[in-house]
Length: 444
Ligand code: L3W
Ligand code: SF4
Image (cartoon, rainbow, N blue to C red; front, side, top):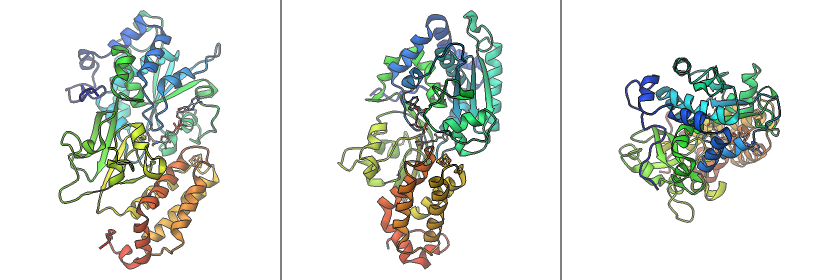
């Protein structure tokens, strides 16, 4: 592993970085100069493939492979859409990156649009982040004035119009096909896949949808080469990853770390989270945003086989859904022993019930049902059959819906019961204590 390399955050902290003059002084837009003047679109795609960078929105799908799937029918426009609708509970890294270094994303959008042959590209930003939208619009105007956007960019003949679109204000609009519907001016309902957006996306034209962090990696990849990028990280988890850390840790915030860092080092070293708040200890972690399975402390630090768990796609999912989880979008939520897992699970489920678009019955009905059962357990009205009922409902949702929101609602419930069943049973057996104000589960 390289040592503590920063690709996305290296300049953050420099005064005035959001202005093009400061960004350029630090080497900004050299990636665009190189890609547009010295490389062909296919050569840019090739470098991204070599880099092995995996989609940073949550699914980890190889970015270069997705680019390679883009259909290119004669005379049909192609689009690049940046998914900046970050709404996953526990995930706030794209927000941070756009706010602190907007030109990095814009430079990435220009390089990526050039590679894909898109002349009109969109950044779909979570609607609540109006100030981020203003920062991006200002930066786009500066880039236009400097000749990096518009017609005949840098005299190369490449045209690009870049549009910032405020999101529809719903979590589901971050699902790529719901996002495309919303961008077309419709209600953000997910579409069935296939066809994938790479074949039929925006206005039924071939479209690549990539996350902010994925696109922001491209200027570095072009400047340093795909091979250099793939030399960072471990195995198929190449490069660095932004992690947004929250919960009961001493130093919450956004961190860029090289993939492969041991989870234990990430939690306990002063360079990162600095450990759990004084007088408390780690109980559980949700490593990749609220949608991924929760793990108890012993399984997040080490796999069931006793191997140290690493911050990689592979290591975090080691053990499958029996004893593993997912890196997901990198929303790392650490909980100490004062956390009531039943309450936490109810809270997550309440979120998914509220955000379900209602198109498929297992998700629409199942999230509501799980929320009601969790509410009654948490509020002292649970009965012995409720735990198995929750497991059953979660299983019936999983894999049976149009989009991943259904799975995302089922996994936290299934994993919380798998690892903390005694806590659910305690709530049912001790209704008075479970309902006490500020009730915290305690085995004592
Ligand atoms: C062409 C094929 N394209 C796959 C593309 C597909 C998409 C990407 C990944 O969900 C996950 C979800 C959340 N031809 C293709 C193809 N593609 N096969 O590859 O696709 P998929 O279906 O694996 O995932 P997804 O629909 O993108 C994303 C999880 O992320 N998640 C969500 C976090 C939410 C945020 C946020 O708020 N920003 O990050 C966290 O873990 O549960 O499993 O582009 O088109 N044959
Ligand atoms: Fe809508 Fe839920 Fe179906 Fe996704 S899984 S399409 S959110 S009802």
